[in-house]
Length: 338
Ligand code: NAD
Ligand code: UDP
Image (tube, rainbow, N blue to C red; front, side):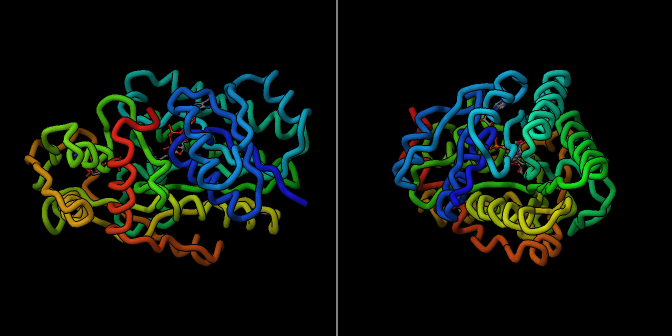
């Protein structure tokens, strides 16, 4: 029987790519999104890629009555919960908004699932829960010391879901800690389009390459890394999307809670990303070296071995591929879906 999966935040960056991966694995995604950080025109793009427009419910995960109605009107095998806020700086400026959306929203969702007897949940957590790690690669049992309200909101939900799992038999939960998702679907039809000035490296690089911004500012080149610039574990968003399908299958086949790092296990520096993007785009990328960004961790990358062993999955698309696909999306859609 075809399985319907409720995808909260499914109109967003990672959610939309996961809808593609779900559809190609034979699942039927149903999107719940308040469009706070996304564009409904993504639905038509999903139709072009998958051949069918996913059902879309415009609404907020914190709306208890809506959630009750959604679960009573149709049946779902499982939920993938992406909906939330994700800007670290904003979370410092307005922590209550982050706890309300990310923590309260997850509680409303989990309560509605419990009431409806839907007990399979995949949750978007983040490597931010580790804070500044003692060393890399980071295994899942490394200390969790998030350094900002965003990271703490993710850790609170992880802990609450652990308690829920212990309290009631039958829950099947995967807590997925993403490292740095970048890239776009290979069609160039869907991708990431941040509102306003991008905070993250790859969207900024894309906007410089396409001429929307003068130059990249590299936030420090005096770190104790090979070339002095910050190192992160970039993972292609389609690898991440496929990781969700693998986690969903695992959860459905094993009545357990798993906590897994989704990263590649390889770090790349800012300068390596710039060089890979120059190869991908054939353009030279103007940049300048600026001061360190306050709060930045110099370098970290995942130990993805538990995820690889548990899910029989791994991120295999290269940094070059991430840049090629980001560039294809950016060139074809310089203003996002508009
Ligand atoms: P995104 O902003 O593109 O997608 C989130 C989606 O959720 C958006 O479409 C937004 O409109 C929707 N949304 C937000 N609050 C909502 C609410 N209360 N009710 C309904 N819909 C709501 O972000 P993304 O990059 O796709 O991230 C998805 C998830 O992954 C988030 O939970 C984020 O914290 C987590 N995550 C992202 C990254 C990253 O670097 N992108 C890294 C680690 C974890
Ligand atoms: N970075 C940069 N210039 C930018 C944006 C980011 O040099 O305009 C650097 C940042 O200091 C970090 C890396 O790129 O070393 C990745 O930053 P991003 O914000 O994408 O991810 P995060 O730091 O949240 O892991």
